[in-house]
Amino acid sequence: MPNDVDGALSALRGRVDTLNLELLALISQRAHVAREIHGLKVASGRPVHDPEREHQMIERLVAENPGPFPAGVVAQLFGELFAATKSLMEGEERLRLRVARAPGEPDRLVRVGPEAVGREPILIAGPCSVENAFQIDQTAAFLASRGVRFLRGGAFKPRTSPYDFQGLGAEGLELLGAAAKRHGLRSVTEVVDTRHVEIVCRHADVLQVGARNMQNFELLKEVGRASRPVLLKRGPAATLHELLHAAEYIAAQGNGQILLCERGIRSFDNQTRNTLDISAVALLRRATALPVLVDPSHAAGRKDILAPLARAALAAGAQGILLEVHPCPAAARSDAQQQLDFGEFDRFQAEVFGPRVEARPAAEVRS
Ligand code: PEP
Ligand code: MN
Image (tube, rainbow, N blue to C red; front, top):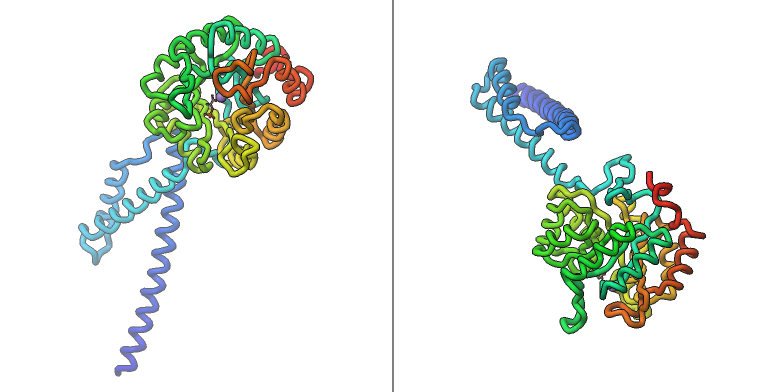
């Protein structure tokens, strides 16, 4: 008799084990189907959570409940299953950043007025700081004559020493905006403070968040609410994970118009100001579909290797170069040692872009 019981028990346990595995396979299968539904909803912009539908499903299960579980238990069991599925979807959602390149996603284009960044390599050039009307206007005129379409210039300068030139502030913004307008260029300038976002938007086409502010999260949120593209520079000691998450702060506020910029990271060799991280370019190009730019000026901190660095950046997939150019670098009020004068710029442009590639009429270059 005991042997019969043992035999029956083990047969029944075997059935329970099999049923457990079948249930597990079924709930896993169910999760896959739920994920497909979730994907369709996200892609079509529909709300992902539908409490009404959950309610209907529970009602139907309770109505068709064959027993022996009472209705309340059936409702509770399936309620748990629905909740687990919902948190699974939410977890996956959190892992997929807005700034990440979706599988098979083509490069994203960032529009700056009539210009599109993300196709042919662009060049953003201009002085480190806007210093006076003559300096910025002369630079804008020169760059426009060379086919450059983006003018940079700092009005609010993040300086290591509080005693160094801090930029002309609002006056600098006006000078930059006027020079860009006069010569048909798009302007790029740094914003260092949440309180300045509005005024910078009034004068500039692109808001730059500098390396030192890459993880100034309140500033990132504020530029994320602005209606201007943002050029986000990598912090001198920031990982790519941190850079992408900084960009996500901007995107999460609704501003997906982001340009990422590698500008050198801090390392041990003092022959350059920073070390240009070329692998960052290749890795970012994979991780995100946003345009990736390279600033060899702040990476090198010297003039003599800017062309090879820019060429390496473009070869690695960079979609643009940011370069400091000044009519008289020796007299510059910031970053004098790394800014190119106009003659040096001409040689740089020829070496990096070939004979006058950037000088094609803008309409030809644009799509
Ligand atoms: C700049 O581009 O003017 C600048 C200050 O660069 P970074 O933030 O990369 O140091
Ligand atoms: Mn500079």
